[in-house]
Amino acid sequence: MLIPPHFSPLLFSSLLLLSVPALLFFFPNFIHEALPLKNPGPHSVVDHLFHRTVLSPPSTSSPLQTRQPKIAFLFLTNTDLSFIPLWERFFQNNTNLFNIYIHLDPSAQVEKPLTGLFANRFVPAKPTQRASASLIAATKRLLAAALIDDSANEYFALLSQSCVPIRSFNFVYRSLVSDPQKRSFIEILSDEPQLQERYLARGEDMMLPEVPYDQFRVGSQFFVLSRRHAHLVVHDRRLWRKFRIPCLPTMEGFCYPEEHYFPTLLNIMDPQGCRGYTLTRVNWTDSTDGHPRTYMPSEITPPLIQELRQKESVSYLFARKFSKECLEPLMGIADDVIFHDK
View: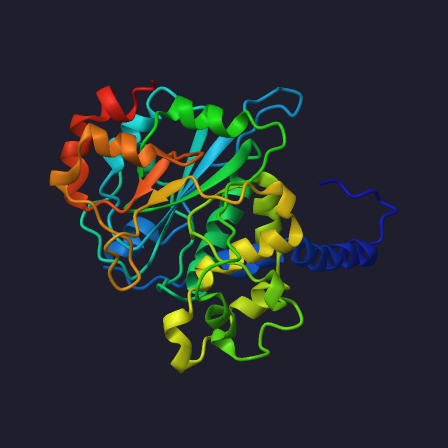
């Protein structure tokens, strides 16, 4: 950059210094949450494959050029992504309509490096633990990375390693981008049986004044957010300070901040902009230790897919949980059932 001869070096230095607080003001959560950890060691598989920011550069398309909206698929995992072949079949022939982002726990012991569409799609990661605020932080990192990486990302679908698609990509895409109001699909419940215990998990008055009990909500961890809501989540610090407070040891059985923070935040900030339900089907029949039912290979049939797709007035797009051994039978019915729109 050329500096005019009359431009004071002192003034120039002052402007540079002033730009730092401005950056911290506009992107506080991204800077705080998305900084990578130090490398765990030169011989670590995790370090070699996943511990760097390796996203492709943002698109350089002209701002005057109309671009189609994209869906950002955010994979939050602490194991191998066993269903990659099924997801790649799902994404086939639609490479200009989606992006993939992966947050993998740095301590995870993975067996296979990721290739194809999933290669080099990792965001800076920190350790995650179930029933802790670490899952909220990881989700914030995924959202921040996707927002910055591509301005065409309009919807942000959070998924786990045990999630699979149960509709074709075209069906999913039409279902999301056709909404002129660009609402988010997130479960927001106020009548959960243990709502009061969940609210009091950190102590009687710990959530006040930011989160009164009558505004506290619960819901599925897995959602599809619009871009404006993804921005809202990434930039929020007010409620985040409350939900990152550890729960009391005696209340750990009620402490699931990843199921509380997002529905509470959006219910307070923009309830009319949310559908109030999730697009990821879960079966809580025969749940074990707070985990939903896990489907096994012998259960994978066309009638199961049809059953998972519809419940009351909700048409689901994804489902969980599936054991990794389900890949082969799922691939066997992928073209004729899962990705066949009727």
